[in-house]
Image 1 (cartoon, helix red, strand yellow):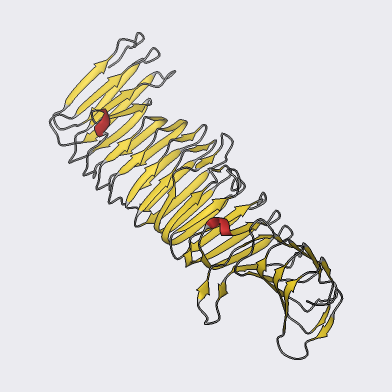
Image 2: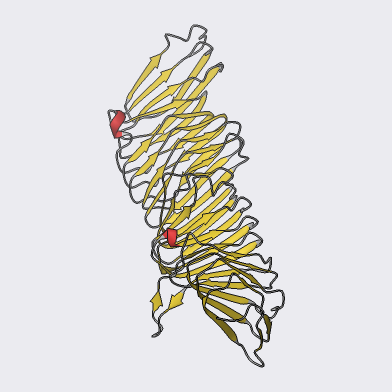
Length: 424
């Protein structure tokens, strides 16, 4: 152990002070020309003042059994090594902190699992690097004032936990293997506006169940499971999501006031929950899907709804569609359309363009939207003799115009409620 106010001059070169098995509750060393301090074990809650150690820019922690609170320093880098208790936080009170590393090696240089919790509430931008972490709960970061966090996770890092990040707006994750971005609580990622993920393994979000302020989602790589995560609120201005993964992408519901745009450049399989835009447009453009696609109900009753899934090679399941103007293109779908509901695609709108599959059975039901006087439906394509189009007029419907071709399928008009109909 060292004296409370030990004075050490490291001289030329890069020097490290190792405090092993600390029994002190307070340390304020005078350090000159020492760049790094390592605390290896402590038996009491430790307050570490670096007021007289301004040369120290790097701290490492190992075998921490009690809390450590640092202050008054110029610390830029913190290394969380092995065997730190995750319920005994290391707190760094320096705005200068930029980098947190979860990484350790044994005497032979082989990676060992890092473990610990760090509270970095004064940091505004952080880069978190992790080498080997065996559970997301073993690497915990709290950063109350951070607006930007970049996470670089090596293949042996299975996850990381973020909590108390209420000001975080920009989050980037680069993971080499399967990785679970975990919230300490369900709402911990609600402040994030821009999420960018580059994944070389299976990416997922755990514990956190919402991204209420997300405006931009960029996801590239292997696969991503956000099935339990719901995006947005009724006041969200907009969402743009750009997805390019070789495997599966899953996402919960999306709710916004403004535009919602999903651009699926490539996906193995796709599951999107219900999508709602109360005043804007909603679009789902799938450039390539090699597997099955499942899409919940999509609503943009005051805007345009666009669904282009024409390059889906598997089966496709589509929920009810509702928009002021609706455009659907399923022209290249090779699998079955809505197999669980008699192949029927339900659309509520007063202006519809529907391009049916040239391979699969098309059953389309178009219902006039409430309040609309003119219903225009154009249905194109289709190849099966049992294709079917049903048009349903409502109380305000005055004219119905149906055009296009379903290659010999049937047309059914349901006009029971269309008491004001004057033109067909």
